[in-house]
Image 1 (cartoon, rainbow, N blue to C red):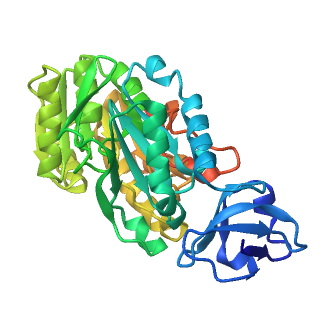
Image 2 (cartoon, rainbow, N blue to C red; image 1 turned 90 degrees about the vertical axis):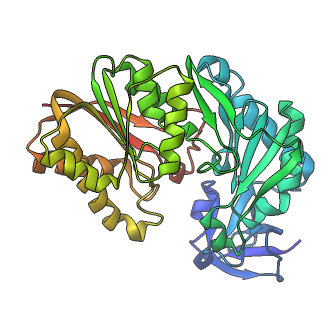
Length: 392
């Protein structure tokens, strides 16, 4: 077993059970561990702090598997899977869905591992060398404990490059999944493309926010920007929205939004292929207004160094979005950039409201769905934040 000793006064985060150890906190290693190899982490005095996965190409040099001494083997991983499933044991019934996040990386003690369930199909991403090393064992444990039929890998994400890993995707275990899987959120249905869709195929983290926004949509005209497969707009139309306009730059995404609209027996929605920033300006120039505007953009900041530039982009779309809300209407606005804090996001919306000369009241603060659990010692796990606002 190779020991990794931390520098004096740099071991406090690990003592507080934060799972990341950056390269600058490491004093020395007793050997040359292979990528993903389990190492024992010691404080400056040589006392053991736990076991982690070594990542020589990442600034996050060690990701902690456990904060005690012991093996990181198939039995340990199966235990972590069992604990993750137990936390979510009643969520499918409570949220009236057959699609859930089953493993949420560091928050479930499995750094670099995310797994979503769509019916009988599991879809996983393994974004670190430690996760890559153990992915076969994790897939076996998940299939055995869930009774699912397929485990499809979607590790085709750019973040793997930071770990020296190439993107990869394909069947990892079990049977080949169908081309499209139909899931339900209450009475609303969505078709999921686990092979070609974004992330693992669908944005499950917005499930509860879709429900909350849809509950406010009845009788309103809805503008659903960055619509992807239509989630917010389809849910709003299903709940009785008077009209829905979906906007996305991707024709493929709009095609999926059309299909999901038809899947729910709905008709009459508008699908606009356009750059959302330009589309918002065009609506403004035509003095077009909406009863509910949804702003759900992709991640604008990967790192804290990009946060300032990202906040300018968020302010731009929120300024434009606020100008499009009719008096007495609503704005649902989001950021999925983990580098943007909830406080910074709220201040950005406040600045946009001031510049737009609109009075804005927060009705509800929004965040990722409960199955996307967060660890109390890993605040970075709260990445999705949003506000539902009344606009005058």
